[in-house]
Amino acid sequence: MRRTIVGVILLIAAQGVALAQGSNERRGWGYAFGGVGGASGSGSTAFFQAGGGGEGLVYKGLGLAAEVGYIAPFRSPGDGFGILSPDASYHFSKGSSKLVPFVTGGYSLAFRRGTSSGGNFGGGVQYWMKDRVALRVEFRDHVFSSDSPHLFQFRVGLSFR
Image 1 (cartoon, one colour):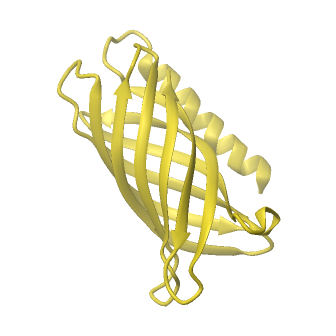
Image 2: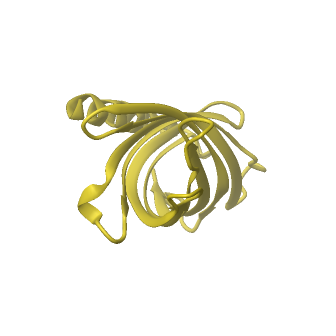
């Protein structure tokens, strides 16, 4: 399972690098992030998340992405779980603008000893400080069933191409 996840991330990142070549427009990038969040509902708790992924634009602002991360409660970091998210996104880019807002959503697979399927949605902004480096700030919410808590996060990271 771990090799599959790493393979998916490497393929997405390689696609991003390939899309980025030969064009001044930002077509693909990798990213790494960290963040804090919480779980809503009766079992609410604060947690942290760290991870990374890759994203590429396939048509105008429409993009495809995949990321993998680790989510754990602050009070017991060893009790966390992995999360894999292949997503679609839309980037509201105005040509060569440095500030690019985006929305995203897709499938979420949580894994530890077993697995759980769900979905995610969110949005944020990338600020391209240099041609190859951007500050990425976003909100993301993972939902696994109608009766499970929302796992919401505020994330900050770097995008690179």
